[in-house]
Length: 417
Image (tube, rainbow, N blue to C red; front, side):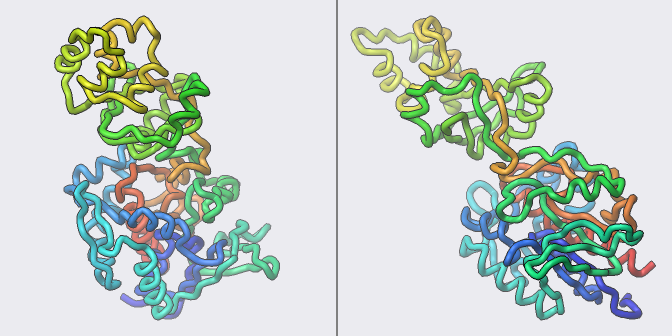
């Protein structure tokens, strides 16, 4: 069904969710104006491309959906409508083929974001999408009843845009320098929209107590490879995952830490800190480690003994001395247990602006099935500004694309009422 007359939709935000919404809207026959505060669109998308642009993940859909934890029920219909398979087909339609890496992650064949973004923008412009750059959304026209009269701060002064519907894809609160600063939160709250506080996700942590000066000076920036982390909850260790992470000046960061960041952040909020256990040798069982540590070492130092028997040296060996009392290190049984479960306390998540992504945002309970705000009919929300979070590995981008599709489809249905 086509619209009887051209209707105008304003898309605010030029990340993946906003661009995908613009594409679906233009294909649906409406006039699309896309506004973004930055000089060019896709800034965070291009940053992700520096790591190879992990678009999505190849695992079966059911475990894929489980990655969204408590928000799986809300995201399930969106991702079934536009999920990993649809995303790969969409990229291929832009002339960008993809491949599955050894970890199951999906990347463009050339491992670059820029060619995909260029092809996408060419197609959007050909479809009639009009881009308005350096237009920073400043809320709604004061005193106006319509939620579709938008204010923008521009280099030439304030501008007002009117539309028949609005798709907001403003991002979360991380990486403000790329355009996602969370400035939209009070404007939506003032209009009666329920917004959960923005919090860091996929983030690093400061340890408690802080590293000693010796350890920080010698080992900040060094990775711990082939380890496992377990977050310890009220009922014992949980959320165990293997991989690697990096020692920082004040704590830890990296893919393995990011994978546990949501539960760890929530534990800190509830209890003041979060306890994790580091398995320094996940490829070896506890009995093997205990037997090797207990072997007589003669005149050899403990460091030499651990290196020769277990391959523990460098930052791994230093971490044992940093975190364990001397009496534990001197006791072979307790030392062996610590090698398999070295306790580390996380005292605080790193600031929101340093995080890869953010949790919190517009609650799904404030939206209908088409992602339209109940408090603001005709206004739709998409992307990271919604209240969900997911680990890295393609899950973040996939849900942003899927929500952009769903919000645009909701806007088209709304305009046809």
